Length: 185
Image (cartoon, rainbow, N blue to C red):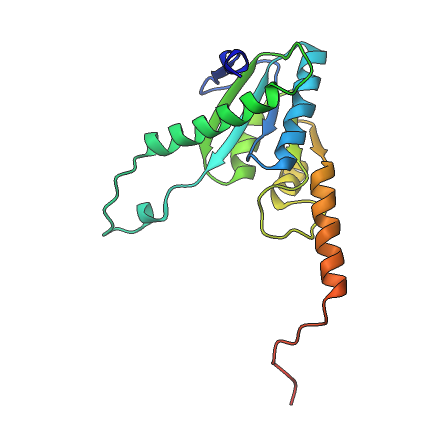
């Protein structure tokens, strides 16, 4: 995996030029999206930029809280998670892979992805990530990107995400109806 990690470098602050941008949250859906982006980048001969979003810790919002984390340490931690994930995926990806850059930005995933994808050749997202609504066919981030990105968007449906949705659907169908206790009258 060290050879794969040596191919990964940090992206420029202001992205320019031809590139495939891919959203990465370390879920199975983002693994499928990253594999698709790597294959597409290799086919086109352009670099792939793996992008992850992070949020500030809650205590940053509390005026009286005392914390030890800084914006740089939170960003570096997010970048390290992305580097590790990309390195793992690169070890299973078809060879030879394109150049890979990583970026971690503070904000909501959809906003960070759309900012980074401005001017890109393609934005690739998984159909489902770590969001809380497992029964949805399309996650909120992929939906926002598909509706508002300024470049073409590919939404990758992974077999793992499909199995998870099917499992949730079957469990819901087999369970007796839940009553919330808020009857009428």
